[in-house]
Length: 427
Image (cartoon, rainbow, N blue to C red; front, side, top):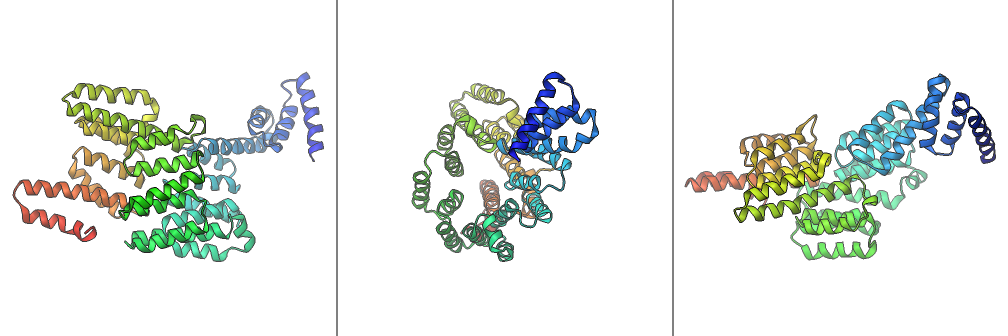
C-alpha cells in the first residue's frame, strides 16, 4: 500500500512539474496527500481540481474536513467551534467531527456537547472518543445513574477503547461526587472523589476537584497538600500548570494564576489557557487600578484600564476577559464603561457561564434590580456543581447588600427576613 502511494505520488508530481495546472494530476496528488494525512497540502491541491472537475468534490470536502479538525485540536476556542460546525456540514456522517465538537463544548455548553457525543455513537456505536467523552461529561454533570448505565452497557472491548475500566469507574465516582455536592452532602462527595483518585491517581482533574472540595469545606491545608502532590507528580507539564492556575483563580490568587501560566510557553498554551492568562493579567491591572483610586488618583486608574483594554485588542471580546475588564471598571466607579463591556456577554444566546459572569459585573456595578431578575432566571437553569456554587455565592453577596441597606435604614426586622433564607442554606 505504501509502495503504491509512493509510485502514484511520483507520477502525479512528475505530471505537475510539466503541466502545473493539470487538474487530474492535482486531484490525484491531492488524494495521495489525503491518504498520507497531509491535510493542508491535500486541500490546496484538491480545491482547484474540484473547481475544474466535480469528481474531485468529495475528496476536496474530506481534505477540508480533516484539516479543520486538525487545526481545531491545535487551537480550540470559539472560532474552532464555528469551523468544526462547518466541517460537520461537509461530512455529517463522519463521527470524528461530532466527537470533537462535544470535546470543545463540554465546559461551556453541556447540552450540545452531549447531543454531539450521542450523534457520534449513533453513527459508530463503539466510537472510543464518544464513549469516553460522554462518560466524562456525565461524570462532571453529576448524572451518576446515566454514567452507570453507560458503563454497564459496554463490552470489555468497548471499555478498553473508552480508556479502560478504571477511567470509567473514576468517571462514575466523579458523577456521584457531583450529585452529592448538589444535594449538599460534602462528606459523601469527598468519599467518592477520594475513591476516584485512588482509581486514577494520575488524573490531575480529579485531584483538582478534590482540592476544590477541601477548600469548600474550609480545609485549605489539605487542598494545598493535594495540589503539591499534583506538582510533584507532573511538574512542568502545561496541563498540570493549568490546573494549578485554575485552583489559584478560584482562591482569587491572581498572582499565583499568572505565575503558573507564565511557566507555560506561549506556543504551548491552548485557547483556554491563553484566555485565563489574559484574564489573570487584567485582574492584576485591576488591582493596581483599585490602589490608584484609594489614593484619589481616579484619572490614572481609568487610563491604566484603558491601556489594558487597548493592549488586549480583539481578545477583549472573549467572555471571561470582557467580564474581568467590566468588573475592573465597575470597581473604580466607571459604571458606564463596565456595563457597555458586560453587554458583550449577553449577545446572541448566552449560556449559563456568560450569565454568571454578567451577574458578577452587575453586582460590582450595583445594578441590583437587573441582578435580581438574572438570579431568578439562573435559579431555573440546569447548573453543574461548580456553577451552582458560584450562583449561591452571587446570591449571597446580593442578599447581604440588601441586608446592609435595610440595616442602615433602621429596618432590622426586614433585614432579618431577607437574610433568613441564606442562613438556612449556609448556616
